[in-house]
Length: 140
Image (cartoon, rainbow, N blue to C red; front, side, top):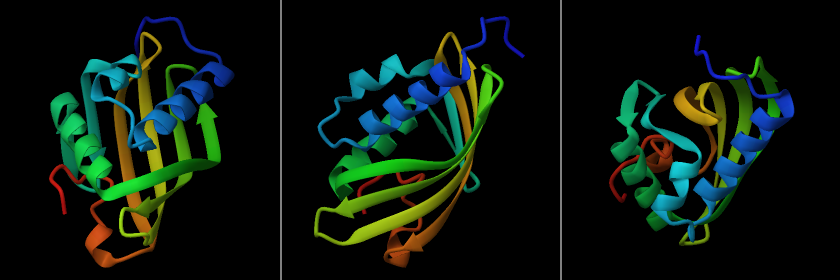
């Protein structure tokens, strides 16, 4: 557990909502994501691990694949230094096809930024080729 001051539940939820809004927006510049993530950020998703630079590659790959997207929380719990969500990520691919993923995720926070995400994703709607959308680091 970190010695950083814990966020309120509202602050933690707001951080995640702002991060997802920025992440899913194809117009977001990679430098803008530093506001939300620690330099030693780690993301584990579906058996793959991404460090901060690989996460930026993931963001770039998604920018090339989707024209818009959103995340809606179904469940959210937090103690202010960590959180867990179940959420639905929806996106429209550049070719107009729609994708829906169910994501179960655990987060750790440090200094009011995200330091770790550990998640599992399930493709609900879309092509099987997009099954890796949660961890893709190269264009499809």
